[in-house]
Length: 120
Image (cartoon, rainbow, N blue to C red; front, side):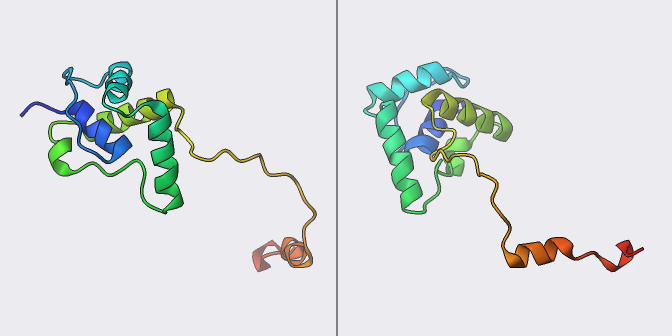
């Protein structure tokens, strides 16, 4: 059985089995183009990913065993990471860095506590 790299990657990104051309190895640029031609442009994939996150469902979607057949796990994970990076979907939510703040009373008390083996 020939590996269906792009079908597996498309499933992970869209949750739909798509009939995409299979180059025999992951080709992220071709995958993104093929997804767009199949009705899944970057914007639609991004909105789908955000909708799945809002609904507290897994995204990228777990790829069924039948679609993973012949695809090495590490290579599939690397190709999916590259596809997410190309699509700008490595993080679905961007947060500002946390800022320093004053510790509350309980946090200050915990910081003053010293384990018994450190008492000198």
